[in-house]
Image 1: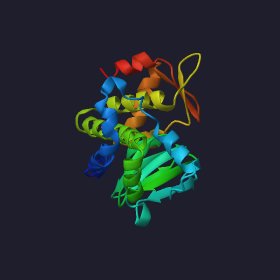
Image 2: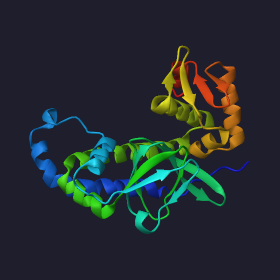
Image 3: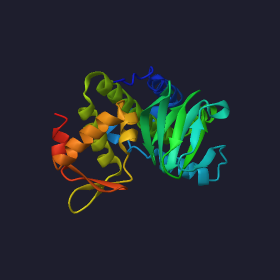
Image 4: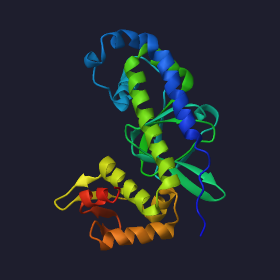
Length: 254
């Protein structure tokens, strides 16, 4: 049985670098707010809302707004090699590919953001819209709009945490633990409550889960069947899955 060995996670170093850059360029504008003390700081603004306001506002910033169709690929090259990608609508996956195998590094939903670098590869899982902010524009905005800098740092930090968690899980956790964590995250991010549990509409199939957690499709199918037999998870139909008992599922992580 072949194990999928991930390539070095350059996304983590890129994320950390962008955080440092945002802090550096936003520091003068943020100094007044920080002087007031943490208890007086305003609530963290949402990056997507700020970007929406900038796009529709009187200032004509050169944002690269793109509509994406499900299945469409985006590669970091040329003008998109560096900068920040913000998801306005839809869902994308950020992945790495090596010797014909793929590993999903992140799943991005509306409001999420990820730094782009040369060789970045993304696939639209649903129809949607993205905004690409060039590195030069991002630095200027960080100076003039501290809210954007703060929200971008928050979004990037979340990606970094998820990246580090993925590396830790692949190094030290079994397939079942990684699958259960992926299901719990999916329930928290885009699950909807029903009378009996939490429904995941259009959930990842076994192959997509395998790419997300760095496992084989066969092992994911085996673990999913075990969760279904235990009554924790059930398939509603081909396009939906229900987590019948989220607490029991979370207990599998302990």
